[in-house]
Image: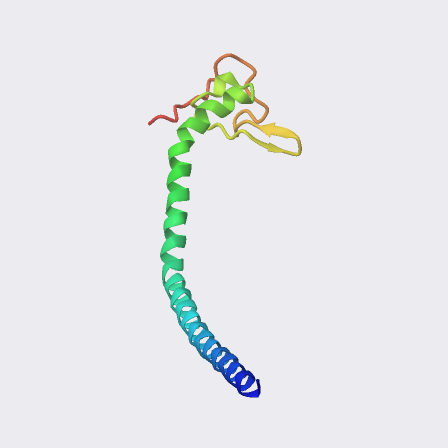
Length: 118
């Protein structure tokens, strides 16, 4: 029984040492992959940020005509629909419609209206 136990113990030790060696190899490979991934992401970070900024600016520019058309309707300023002067932001719980008529024109048409769709 003593020989059997020595063989079994030797086999267990060999297996553990082999697993340890393999796990160290895997760990080193994962570290290399991690470093490569970090480098790749760093190389892509600036172009991706520039692209994201360009897309954001483009979307804002494309949405501006729609915003200039829909926002006045929502803010109950029908005379301002499509006007390039419409601002429509709220400051201190008060809407600032435009520089010429800060609180709105109050009429169905505005004498200062100029189209946004140029």
